[in-house]
Structure formats: structure tokens, C-alpha cells
Length: 268
Image 1 (tube, rainbow, N blue to C red):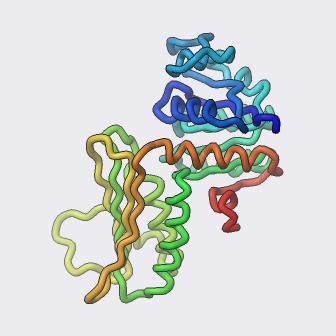
Image 2 (cartoon, helix red, strand yellow):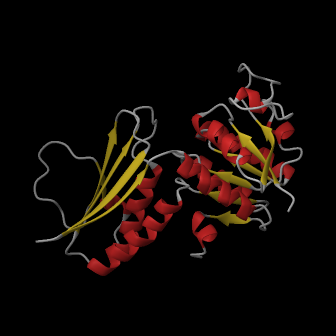
């Protein structure tokens, strides 16, 4: 089997380095390009050496179009500010794109939807296969237990995470709201002061930040006399790498459209 040519945006980031290592560990994938920020040290250097491995004969560039010359799929875990431009380039080059960037706003989401008219785009705020199964379990529990159970979401991440709540926690809250047929305005992101009795039609979301916590999400279904907790804990960012690379392999030959990890797992 010929290995799938993959490019990685932001190879010097925490996830970028792990993605490079993950690709090199697989026989079905090959790294053919990678980008760094314009002006960053490392322009033109070997990607293997630059990310702490053996020389590969593939060189870092700040120009995404150069990194995509031989690529059949692009994996992007960079930032909301960068992802829109990356989408434009991938769209122009007709290269499918796997996006694991979190904290996206309406402009970035609109750009994703627009690009999906011309290329295959898979966007997931969390690439963990376990988290995406958690989404299904959360939906089932919310629908099965009904309105007598109060809904709370608690997430914890490392001190360097920039967005809060996490994209995963926000998606869980949206899943809960949909399952209960509640408007998104019922989601309470943190609480303070004297708030009175908890409204029945409310979904609480709390974000914790500290240390080197990779990622934890717990959904509480709190009834009278019993409580159900569904928890996912990521022990390593390699969890997200495994999901992203599985998604890249799956996406490479798909027609234009917007996809999710659910498609990869066979839920849709």
C-alpha cells in the first residue's frame, strides 16, 4: 500500500510536533510538508531534525502552498487566526483538511462551511475517539433520564489553554440542550453571587485551569437520590493525534463536504 502523503500546519506547536511523530510511526502515512510561522527560526530546516527526530529530506516553510505541493490531506491544529487563511489555500489547492483547532468563532466556522463546498473538511473540537463516543452517551442519557435530572458539565485543562470553556464542553452543553429541547440561552457558563434556587431548565458549565492537565470532561446527571456521572480523561495528547490521523486517512478520498469524527466512527 502506498503511504498517504500528509502535510501538517504548525509543526513547532505542541500538537504539531506530536503529529509529526505520529505520522512517522505509521507505515500508511508519510510526511510531505509542514509549516512554521513567518519569521520563525527554522525556515528551510529539515522537519525531522527541527521536531527532534531524524532528518527526513522534507523542509519547513512558512508558505502553506509550498507544504501542500505533494499532500493529499492537511492536518491543522494551529489557531483560529490562522485557520481561515489555511482554508483558503487548501481550497485553492483542492487538498482535504482535518481541523482540530478550538475556540473558533462565527467567522471561522463560516469559512469552514464555505470551504466545504469545494473540498472535504473534517472539523472536530476534540479529536479523541473516546470523547466523540462520550457525545453519543451524553445524548442518550439526557433523553432517557428526562427533565427530573439536573445537568452540569465540568471541564479541566492545563494552565496554558487559551479558551474557556473548552470546545468539547461547549459541544456537550449544546448536545444536552438539544436533547432536552432547551434554547442555548439556558446554558450557564459559571456562576457567582446569590443566584437563588437552581432553575430546572438550566445547564451549568464550569471550566478549571491548572498545571499540566491534558483534558478532563465530566457530565453530571443529578437526580433526587441518585447521580450519574460520565467522564472522559485524556492522559496524553497522543490521544488527539491518533484520532486526527485516523480522520486524515479516512478523509483523503472523500468528496467535498463537511464531516465530523462521527463519520469516521460510522455513526452517520
